[in-house]
Amino acid sequence: MTFPILVQPHDGRFQASVLGSPTMAADGATKEEALTALRTNINQHFAKGELVLLDVPYRAVTDFAGLFKDDPTLEDIVKDFYRERDAQKLAEFPE
Image (cartoon, rainbow, N blue to C red):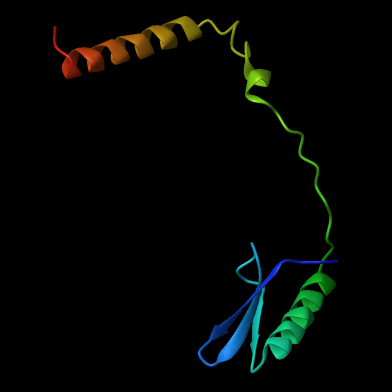
């Protein structure tokens, strides 16, 4: 398994961390020591659980079109939005 790792100097030592996971980090006197320590941390972390991939279906904005078409309160909500918008326009640009 391959992870993107950021290695940077820190207080005269090196810190290696997994990008996107601030809790997965280790340090060492050299870059190699920091990476070795991080590899050990990652292995210990995964030994406690299971790495799985979760597929979440993508929904486009258009998938929501018409979702509330039969909602009896939709017309009232839309009218309230328009009333509020018109009041704001009038306050900003009095006739």
